[in-house]
Image (tube, rainbow, N blue to C red; front, side, top):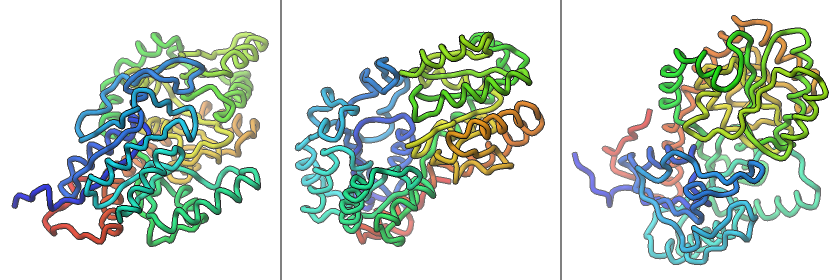
Length: 410
């Protein structure tokens, strides 16, 4: 049976800019016979070079972010700067685009820009239901006044929308701010598991060569950190914990990323003598797989505001054991202490040292945890997000779709 596009749910996704780990989700939705998807971007950042917060480096992602799904850019997309705050994106033309779109629902990614509020207002005035997908958690305390304002605004907003939650901690956030459980649908944060696992299989035979190219030795275990070198990511705690472990066990630390703390990290290491630390700098999307293949352990020691940590998903696809803190939003769903990694209290250097030492000292445990990581992340895939978004759209719009239109996602 051939189904016409008119039978599909017409969904508009409104996002600040193209993001590499969201693009595969758009493609999967576009390929799903239940959905007719249009993605509307307020900014072209990422397609064009922009300041992504890597210490001033201008970044454009070196993979195609725009193929495989219908997309549009708002008029000021080439000028809009996503790092300039709430009023940096204030695109009034999104209102007319939504009003003439005849959508069954709109899906906004967050509410941190005025453009997204314009989109929601246009939808409500047009009688179009709103889905909100965002990533906040309850893991981090906020100033009391700010928290009061947020709670007041969110409780009103969530009365008139349905939520797409990315994981368990995000689900708790929605519920705490008044979203009804029956209005919440799973849309987990994922990466392209199939592509990453294929890359891992291709690159593992060249592991020794890759290590040499990155500047790490062939023999000793490598701990990997990937992220911006900022205080929220906890790189100074990692430097301290690693230095302690290395004083008694041979190991190496590979740091991928740039940021304002790099010079302080180097200063602390220089004062301690030979370090075993390699700063690889910024690696783009086509290069980052090399770092995961070179590593034996992945560590994300974030101190605050790590609402998810998509690099955890990536590391797991390369069969890496994990050491993360309890402030990493994905830890609750993806890291099972004693099974595929260890979760330690944020800012506790002693606990971080003990966890790293445990994995450095026990190679078989590393391999066992790595196998579990791969198994866990393989079950955390875009198909779950597609089905959750479709279910939310159906529930919000009151539309049912033909029984023959089944998900192509597994």
